[in-house]
Image 1 (tube, helix red, strand yellow):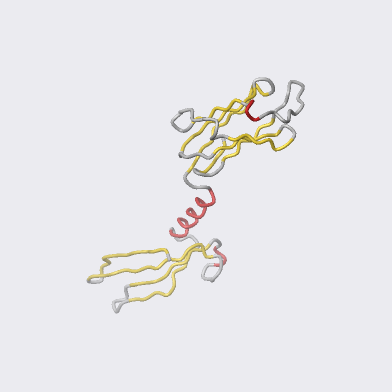
Image 2 (tube, one colour):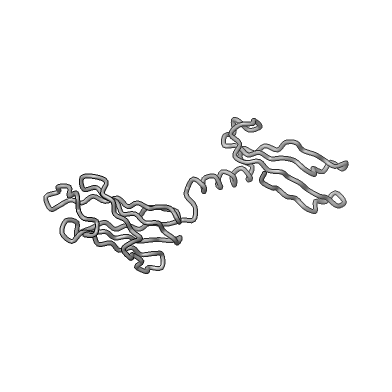
Length: 171
């Protein structure tokens, strides 16, 4: 299974070998049979939404841009040289793993991992009414001014020394 992101080019590599295990190059692209199924299991290949490119010496890739989140399925084969073909599931997500990693780092920070509260302000009853929070990638640099994952402004309101509201807003 391969992974991909919606709206981003997916490349499925394959190599074509003949019966004597020799690489087969220069196959006309239109000689390949292509099947592409979207997450609803509908065949959506129409001749224009999948491209095949020969990299060199019998190494190729099929590419397409998914427009739906879910599991896609692609099949590419050649009746003479590549009858066993290439098939693969491609799980398509809304986000790539780099953006998911950033989101997870922020979640860990807000659960107070590598967490720093500063610029605190208190009312006359000793209740904190505002502060700032920084979260860091590395615990060894907490409190510093570098490698900050995110910063937040905190505010709170009170009635009779009981908290009414508390907000944490990303800067």
